Length: 467
Image (cartoon, rainbow, N blue to C red):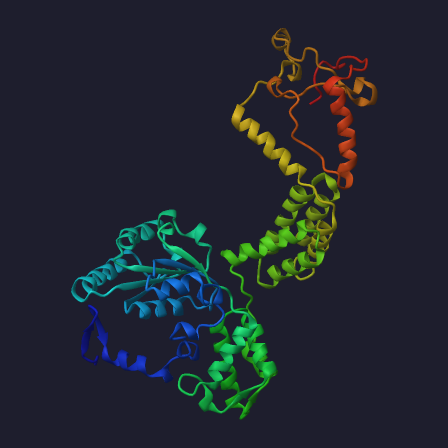
């Protein structure tokens, strides 16, 4: 039988649930140790330190709608709750994964009631707001604009990409950082020393090395650190151990999950680090980021495709062999699979990082594409057209075409672009690697086209362009 219910802020509250909320023993350690004030939050001095923007706003009681962007366990939910307390506001919390427009309407109704009858503000916290679709985000707009609710959205994704422009323009964005290891050790020690909410009463100590091991394995996530500590305490008590050392922490951690969401911002961050390391000619960093992706469960073919793209985009003809190395690595992986397939992948990453660099290929493509888009499909010069029929020959198709193999050095000064683009330059070889030699050869050809007399020769003996 359910207990009687009372009304709280327009909603029914289960009395059993209210009692359970007060019973700290029913809550995980991470929830019990959730900071209650701004001063208890660690590791976010860049936004909450003295004189910082958010701290100044809070000090003036001017808390705007905002988006909190940061990795898991950095304190987004905690900060939202504390902001509501600072405003003495009602705190409404929903998950974008579980909630829809209907629930938002119910919250808006309660917010109107609190404003109209109790003169109380409402902080609406939306966890994983990036998972709301456009219609759901648009439904928030009028209520954020009117100030009926102060929106605090939490996201692990870059809001520039995941939150629509209209909503983004009405919110300030604050970036929360992953906690560094010193901050995580501080979180662990606070839990160990706290007799009310923490675990001091359990009488178990943790060595300095073990506390550091918790911090290292938690990858910036305070929640993960406290969960690991809680499991380690249970293991210690089960073994009648009064001091937790590194082996116990390793057992508690078991499989260390890397922070890497293949569909999220961290994914693109690691990919970007790999590409920039390759472009920066750092084979050590390139191999590190590639292995980081593999260990996190990335599909190897995705990495290999990125290497193939890089070989053309950032190396190109400075080392034509680079593309062959990258595509050979892809073929080798298809042949042997995992785990041995990581070896040609590593070989390719190291080779590409050490190869001479040139972006002449992508620049040439971009320049040509720009002309095509701005000028449209310019006509093919008649001399470049085939003339397989009498009608085409009567239209002067192929007339005056010079067949390069009939000339000295198999080259003749000729223009092959549409007449409107004569003299346009798209491919400009760099002075790196093989491209330096290509550049010298091309410079001579271009000089001949730009003004030298044509060497003597003859027309295409077959009457077409061989192409």
